[in-house]
Length: 326
View 1 (cartoon, rainbow, N blue to C red):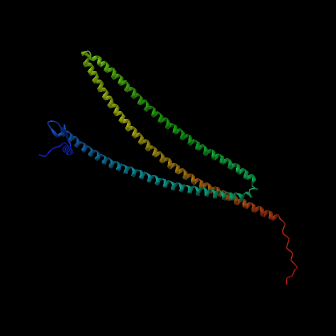
View 2 (view 1 turned 30 degrees about the vertical axis):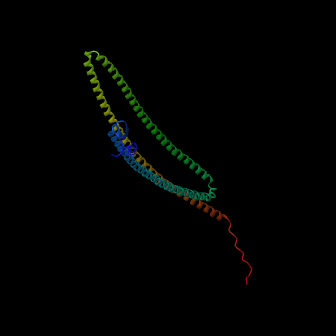
View 3 (view 1 turned 90 degrees about the vertical axis):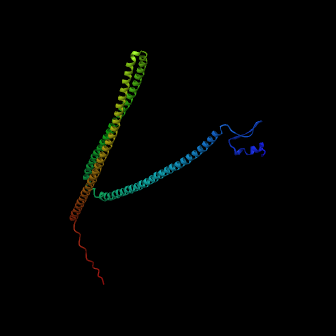
């Protein structure tokens, strides 16, 4: 047959993965390795394991890209919403600023007009000096009274608001104190129960030594377990009731706050409209009174001028000129 050499066997060794070159006095060739079937299974398992790891990595990468895309979309939505809100708020702020500017310009114009009227009227107030002093004194007194009433009203509102805040703070402090007391009492009760259970176990260990007390110890332990189970059920039911009660109280408080804020806003709007109407009526009344006063003063001045003119001597007649014109 064909001659088999060592170099030839080594050259074809890679064709037989689970074989090993062996050469001795009785055998020369490729001999199967020990547990070669297990090696085949292990290599197949390694291939399957690497494939599964690669599939898992691909799936996790796909999930990661999807999560990243969702996070990116969420970020862009938040960014767009924030910028839209900022643009809307800036627009509202500009409109409010223009309204304030228009209001200030209107007030400045009104002040300028009033200042012009005051300068015109100042020349005619010399004849009515004493009357003006009395009028100014009365106006100052009225202004002081109005300011005192308004400041007192504001102070009372501020004090009432402070008292309400203090009352709410006291209520919250009481609730917190009760919650802390409940937690502390529960903790102390747990410690007492653990201590009692420890003592009962020690006593039970002592009772086990005597066969006569074993039955009583078992019954006492069963009663203790049953009572503990019943107590835990009652505590769980009580906690469930407390949690739902807190939700109901929170809902009721929110509803009451909304109703109260709606009522307060309606009162503020009605009060502002009433004050605006009263201010318009007061301005109209002041303007009417002032124009009537100016008219009376003008009539008095004209009357005095006519009287002074009537007391003056008549003017002499003009002499005719003898100059003749051609």
